[in-house]
Amino acid sequence: MSHVTYDNLWEDAMRELVSVLKLEVPTYTFQGPQNLVDYCRIYVKYSKAYKLLEECSDMLVHPQKRMDCMKTLEAVVGRILEIKHWMVHLNTGKEVINLEDTLVNMTLSPDTVEIIPPRHLVNDNAKNLEIREKFLLSSIK
Image 1 (cartoon, rainbow, N blue to C red):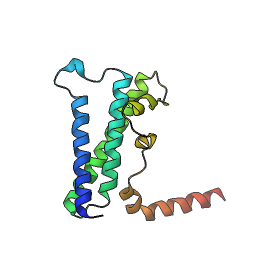
Image 2: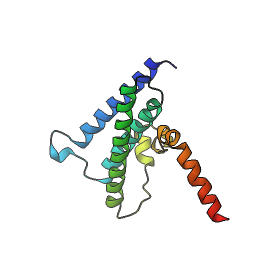
Image 3: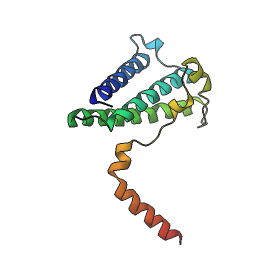
Image 4: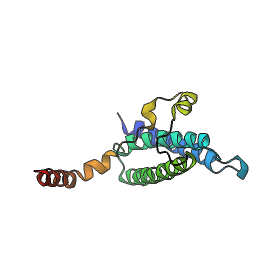
């Protein structure tokens, strides 16, 4: 794929983030997220943006764009964790939250909300992860 494809993917991710911000911070305060269903929809939208950013962060050619994409990716991960915290709080402390209805309403697959570690973190820390794994394996024996 060409760099134009990933630039377009980055633009799509940024558009998705802008639409999520419109849901989270509306012009009128009474229209903001107030219940678990609203937070579930926001969580799914952030997850969708995360997938787009994670896909294009590894393939962007320009170092400045890549750095901006990685910073945005880290911010989205932080926001996903904050939203998840609020969802657990609204779900009376239960960490398992049913997102099936939200995904069906948004016509998305369950893969959308699966959060995997960003590739750049795994690739950049491969040596440290390998050393840690060897240490853990040696301590078991």
